[in-house]
Image (cartoon, rainbow, N blue to C red; front, side, top):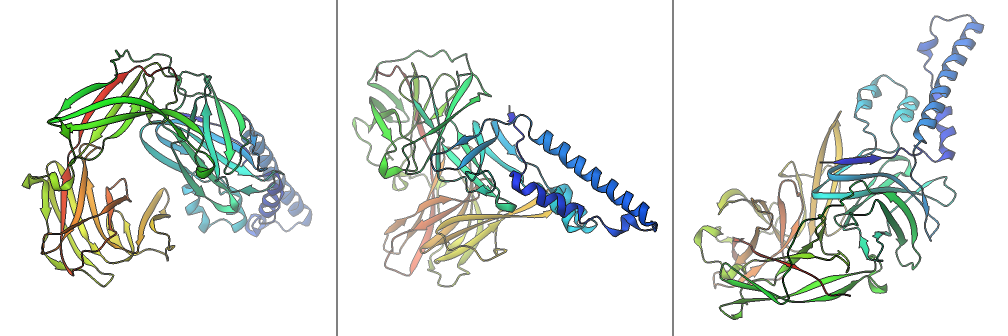
Length: 480
């Protein structure tokens, strides 16, 4: 279920309205006056068209200014405006311009500029229901749009627990307009009003605004806690929750991170009573009874459920059905790489190996390796761009740039906790395991980057399925 609280705000800073009005009026096509030869009639018609345009503009301005959420001035002088608040898994804000595409062939440029939304459409999806606060920024005089990045966003509850944004998404449009989505997987769900704070990076001063909570949750799941330490036996492993300690985030050294404190579990993983050294250290998340799931849940929730997940190291996987080794090849030296484009099912995970490539930049679109539409930035890792190809249709490109050998693999999982490991084997039996960097999340394309060297030119690529084991613990945290 998705809930949208979209608040229409000023389409443009006030100083830009006159520019659009005069541009549009000045572009009234001569065809509208064709056949009208009487100078007096031409003047009347021109005045009538101009008046209609201005009245339409004024009506639009009045409507667009209704229902604004309070804006907030930051310590660095910027003014942040909250454009919308959305809750759910599919989030969208702004106005689509797809309907304008066919009009570009028949309307003057000034008219197209006038009807084109300054605030274009932004959308995103979240795996679980989340609250998203969409903001844009103006300069101190409210005359020009400015960059709305470089500020922490956080909620603060009645216990002074801080709930920082768990992620962001930023987009830029014409006229200097840009917006940022501040994504909250965790927030004070019981509160009808939410205290939202913004703080510029490297500043100690926060600015506060109160907003309505679109996802109030007064009921709570009925859980029965157990004592700490607690142990679960799962698939031959013993997960033990030994204790809870207070973790502090933020500080001067991590200026981009909000100052917050939360409970962090201490786990021990054993097998037959001995440390399980061939398994990964447990990853963890925590839930509260109102539906929050993440890590930064503060210190005052009465009950918490910790979820620990571990996977075997790739060397510990012995089942042939979970391992796939490709033929021995020489390391590629050209940008064409070695392209296999081959598929296999490992367990219930569908795997496609695109190929092994030397250092460079490689672009994917619609799930296939392709050429970038324009030269790409030299940033390491993934970058993306989108182009509107027709009304309502877009094409997206993701480019991965690296200075190391990289294997590109598509992984389609049935369980989001399933992983694959990708390694390079040499003829002597040595193996170099890669580091994963997810790109096209929708299509499951991942770059596996090899940061070391085998010391040989001959190698075989291997993919290993890592199945997860999980344990859950419901506990009552100590008094902080």
